[in-house]
Length: 380
Image (tube, rainbow, N blue to C red; front, side):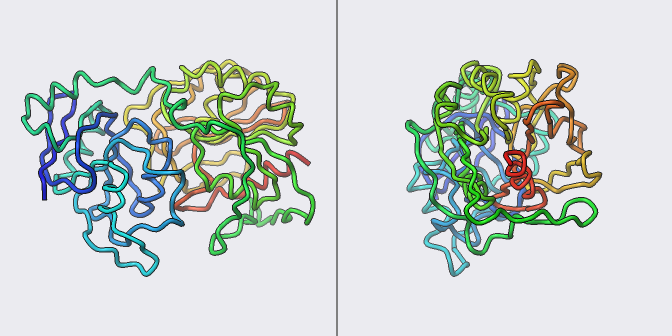
């Protein structure tokens, strides 16, 4: 196998074996603690502009298949693992992870001490880096990392949002867990009535496809619009509700998105996820800040204040809402149990709420899937 290197802006370099694509790419180096779901992670547009390290020791053992993609292709700049499986053991696999990355032109790095890399990122924070099969000289690689553009201040949403409006028609996978799950006290919400479809406009800032599947499964007709759409363009479709999607990068540079959300608050029910959560806070007068190393993984504990329970959630974000800047009309509904950061908001008088995590959970867990039903009920 060819050699590959990962260099960080702090002067650290890791040299191992290349798998997948060849070349040189830069991005913010971060880590994800999920043990499975690597294909969903690779195709999540929220990872645009990032080089991701998986903390699980072996990745790729069940291969890849078309059913597990969350966008039109691999989104991240580079992929780092301790051991890349060379075989695909699952009967659904249509190829190996290495073949998948090679077809996408995404550089993979294996055979390094990922524990040391993750420890460094936890202590010093996420850093700009370069992954390369071409630049192996330590001094040259480190210089390339230091000269690469930082993630803060970049509009990455413009790179991943769709170009045109579309109608979502794909249903939820038949083997997925049902969305109707118990709430606090064992209360079971009613499933959507046949023929009672609500029209939802989903503003796509880099939306994972499973979000649209869940919206459809909860009883919605989904129109997907580019995140650049104006409030007037959205309202012209007379939606019953507006969904604000996940997406990559720094929310505070997305003034055009914030302006649209500001024009929608109070005009139509709103549900935001991840970047959409941050945009709702910004539109109402709050601010955001960059986390030291972010929340990325399928095991993030969140306390739901509304129902007095803990949910294990899937997350992928490097920014968070600053609670101290929130206006009085926004109530914090969910908090992260690891660091106390804001994980959910709702407007006290208007039909709008949001969460920082991913209730569509591709891949898992499904603790928060009931939020799609809550949105449907908000539009009733």
